Image (cartoon, rainbow, N blue to C red; front, side, top):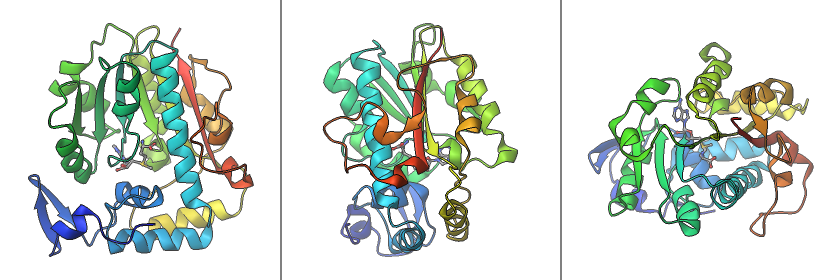
Length: 282
Ligand SMILES: C[S@@+](CC[C@H](N)C(=O)[O-])C[C@H]1O[C@@H](n2cnc3c(N)ncnc32)[C@H](O)[C@@H]1O
């Protein structure tokens, strides 16, 4: 994986810099940059890589799981645009731009597809803005999953999403970053309530399968300064789809969800630690 050769490392020669008018603190670990590292990206700092090393000590398969999550996301977007006829996507907890971004996959199938990226890490805003400067159909906003009104009431969301027409909301690897007290089920229910008939919800998260390393990984994640990364059971997570029709094959490990040609690795028991699914509002 890349060692600090990315544009951010080159741009930032002190602890706090302003990148595209966004302040970035290179001493603070970032979930988005850690995920970027696991995907083989270059937009991460030493503090992020140290957190990655600590996680990999507990679960060496962590990069594989991140890559599988990303493959699931790409496959699901291909399904949403190519098979389900969706032309509008709100991607919450979108992460840093990486190879095969949601808007690129979607617009490869239909260039008219609108995409709103949402993340609460300002570094995502800085990078995505640069990427999207010339793309009128895709935008990025800095907002928090815990405040759906701010996301769906944002002028940029209103500019690109026609709420009367079916749209998809992607919650890829993000509900797991909410504590129980932050009510991930309530947040998912709020978002489902905003979907019109024919709209879709994608959810992916780490999964509690009884694997003893999960608890240890949650501890390391928190001690690294990234907050929570909850492992919830399949039974807890299926509730995120209440009232929706689950698309085949249901809520399953990422490598089982219609695996495509770009899937990163052969079967591995660790895949059970990360699950995803897509539901349709009747
Ligand atoms: C593991 S990455 C997932 C990226 C992408 N969705 C995917 O599935 O490939 C999680 C992202 O969620 C963002 N995130 C975490 N908590 C959030 C919150 N409360 N609101 C919005 N974004 C959040 C992080 O900054 C990070 O970019």
